Image 1 (cartoon, rainbow, N blue to C red):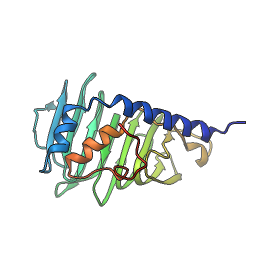
Image 2: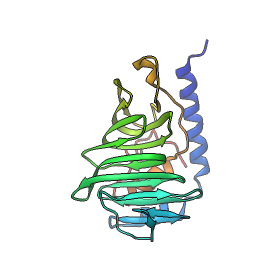
Image 3: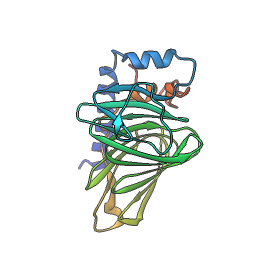
Amino acid sequence: MKHEGDFFERTRREWLKRALLGGAAMPLLLRDALAATARASGLLEVKGEVLINGRPAKLRAALKPGDSVATAAGSSAVFVIGKDAFLLREKSELLTSGGQALAGTLRLVTGKLLSVFGRGSRRIATSTATIGIRGTGIYIEAEAERSYVCTCYGVVDLQASNMPEARETVRTTHHDAPRYIYAQGESPIKMIGQAPVVNHTDVELVMLEALVGRKPPFVGSGSEYKY
């Protein structure tokens, strides 16, 4: 009999191979980021309708802790705040707070967010989860009944909002332990469950880290998927 964990591991590896093969045509923004020598900041890519603090956003607009970013259908935004870089997908809203150019606390109200963080503690909240960040690449999808969290690399502390005793510390090097965190469950064990890898790529992670002068830990390790 095949175990659920085996299924998720096969799905993870197959998805990564497809995603990276599909990323052979490297986006212009990625090429520019890899060629850049200076650390970027602000709103670096705008597709479609993007709002900062409720107002239409312009390319290169400055962003600071306390700002909100929202995207409409078919829209997306790439931006940098301090040592952290973000890709906010369509129909998403992100609220930030903090000080001294560091967004220490973020809330993904709805939608999908890929982000990479420098050293130091951060916290991301969704309607169903609180996620403690410790120098991490992470992809999150926020829905009313569950949140999806893939710790692409690094360490995060997961906690279910409606059952604080449901918690897990996840340590990964390469998309090893995606999780669903549910709004409701009969026990702590059922509040946090295994998930497949979905809707984000290593190409995007390389691009985001390059924008803040870094590279993902899997690059050059010999274990990364080739593209």
